[in-house]
Length: 126
Image (cartoon, rainbow, N blue to C red; front, side, top):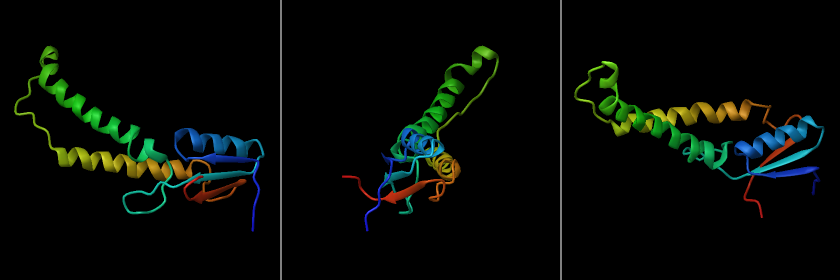
């Protein structure tokens, strides 16, 4: 059985899912195609940016920046700290929790369950 859509969006990352949502708001039927799987092997919205790229990188960057500031800038403000150290496992755990919270929020953003004229396909687009 073949199906036709007004719009096909390849990738449910930050640009793709917004484009798909906007198209449904304009009354168009939308197919949203993505193949991203989270670390549990389940389908996940947000693409590379949310799940492995931009968002996780920024979470780690923020932790690194705070470490740097504690070592090099706090004293300028009259704040003394000693024995500042990095716990990589905790940094990774925090990063993972940010992704865990953001991915479902992305899914809920506009009833991603196939309603509102949008149908999701978890496959590789060709």
